[in-house]
Image (tube, rainbow, N blue to C red; front, side, top):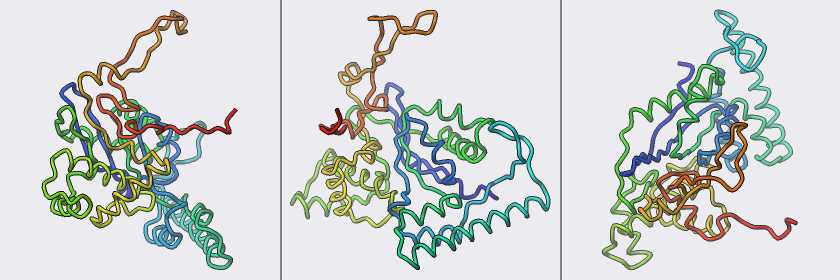
Length: 321
């Protein structure tokens, strides 16, 4: 199957008594559709980084498992075609694409191996032929599915979106109570090693459930950050994960803090809100008239996003006039 490397897996799926659902995926798609994926602002994302991943790692991937279009559309007007190559034309297109890959590999190696150009640039030459891994969390998926799991969408992001939709519809979210946490990777954490960690760091032999959750949130946040280097599934070195979490917080790198979230209390739900304008018959906002949509924290509904629990999570800059 030509789409075997386009994948979607749910790693955390939670729902509240109010019916608010929060879901985290790990997805793999062609690098060429990342820009389209990133246009969806209701999704919190962290993904593999061409600035972070070693050149030799990227080189191995592009040689062993290159991205080749799953179907070859014939030339067409507009954004979407409906006719596809067949027979020997497909073989010709595949071989031509791979020759372009080979040329990109050759030139990237020349830059990196011969004159020591940074991976940040050399990896860019390989991107059209690479797959890309993303950790993505959201409570509001319907707009994404409506636009991307649709016949008018680009065929590769369409393929991914349909796989995500199937996963979403076939998953049973875990019911969480007020104050409980949505924690990506949390179900796979080793509680014995967590207990040892509490003793090593805090000299605490009897941590509470809340103690466990706080440290799991830190570990999960670090794992979401590690996708930049594609080592988010690494070993269970929870101490290093917590150290990474603390460094990220101190440096103000907040995007990995957007995947964990706590179920809102009733007071929080009725306090956190967006102000929604009331529109007139010309679709213009009526001055001084509006309503509130309650239960929002960042781009999540019904959950307090971990990032929003930090003072100063949205940096200011005195240089801006």
